[in-house]
Length: 81
Length: 250
Image (tube, rainbow over all chains, first blue to last red; front, side):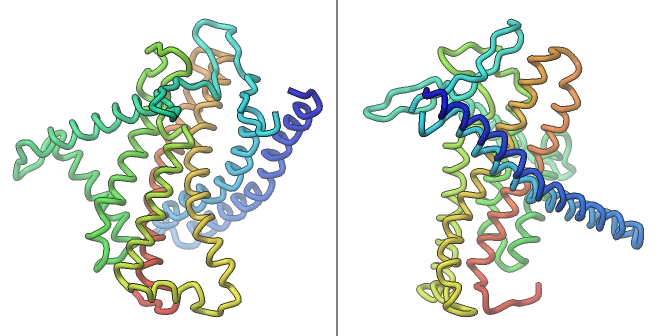
């Protein structure tokens, strides 16, 4: 593989995961905080809130995972190699 | 396509990390990933044996395996009912349930079954859902299912949903049909592969005990991913059945 392409791919992979983690991180924090506030206000709804929260967190996490998939493609199945 | 074998360490005999190496079967002009087929067959066999054993001699008061399978059935039924509604869920229960069970057992088999003890020439056995081909197949099946559901329920009127609120959103509505399977498949594939990679890297660094909490986390996230896939499939089918315009309470 061309060393320039290899270096660019590795940097790109790092950026894909790193930048992709920022948004979902903020979002998950906000969602979890709101869920805790909801449980504190209404403890009897804890089960429902937790189930919804877990599902929502999985959705947000998948945004980072898209970045991770791109990183994996760049590292292991690079189309430009 | 050349694979960059960046992560091909062989430091300890216990821990080895391989990505992008496959056990190829050649069928005519096709190249198949053999290890995915082998593990999928094991998963399908497990599910078949479990359901046959559980339904072979049903008791009025369920015990043991029958009890477990009834609990699983009720869980799946609740997923379908919550998304599709009381009226529509029955017809789509087998599809949603098959998706959930196959993905769930596949994900857990990757963590719980000692696949790596079995040597195969090239590549290694792992969870079938950690291969993009499996997840894309499942996601495309989901696409087909919701198109079928829409056409069956509303005929050509199904296309009305593309221009329903306003025709300006037509390109986005069409794009949605492509992003749905894309995101479904990438989400599942990425999560499972990421789990296995994280565990493999940790095992590479510290072979004993330290990776255990991460493995537990992996079991948890893979169960959630199976739930997410089944829930989303049911939600897409429901959307195709209902259309955008006619919101109704259920």
